[in-house]
Length: 128
Image 1 (tube, rainbow, N blue to C red):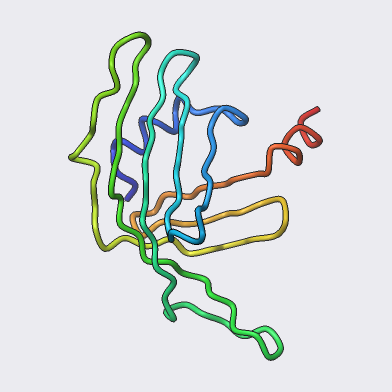
Image 2 (cartoon, helix red, strand yellow; image 1 turned 30 degrees about the vertical axis):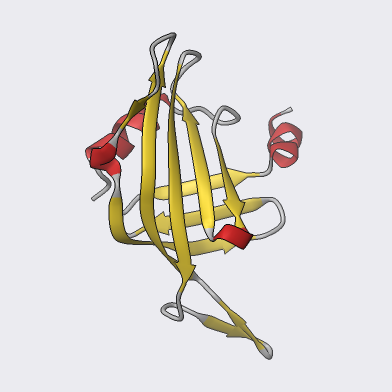
């Protein structure tokens, strides 16, 4: 069910070239996907934790889902100017946290995309 654009990006993406960083105080995360050496796609996603899909661990509540709106997306190819991709903006999506520890984050999107993120140090240690 993943969108065609996600499938196309997945074919070019390589470990260590892309990143996704959470800006928790502003409830946003930023993605930067390198497509080879000369191209990249950037996105900004506003998120909001939700009680759907939560769990309990001892006396703590563990949030497992965040509601997501893609608020900005763009592509840069080689030396050409960055091009906005307004057709990628979406409201009402979500990410489920499938696995999370200090080094790895695995999420699954509402349209079927599976995203695996490693801290750079962990990836270097694992692949090195």
